[in-house]
Image (cartoon, rainbow, N blue to C red):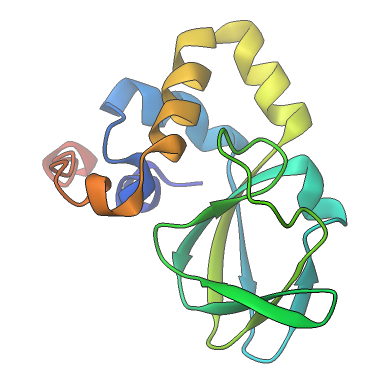
Length: 143
């Protein structure tokens, strides 16, 4: 995944250029179209999933329990997991998700343990607190 796209995610504002470069090869992107569902106890249970864009409705046992949107994080690797590990998310609008698999995090931890720690710490910061962290200025570096 491109470093600039990672840098645009509010989740990752605390990370530096070097850390973003280290995690970029391990990140994958997925768009879930409006109206489609994903199960949080399926393949996503083994992931760290960051919501970049869009909104989704979270249901557990058929009952609505909340929404996810930009700044939210879910999956087995989230430092502060939700109380609904077997929920489904239905995309209200197209959801752009950035994902790191458990396997890829394990590989990354072997070569860059501090970067994995920084990534997981950044994902533990509440979205409201992330807004106060300045974005990394990478635009000039991309030229």
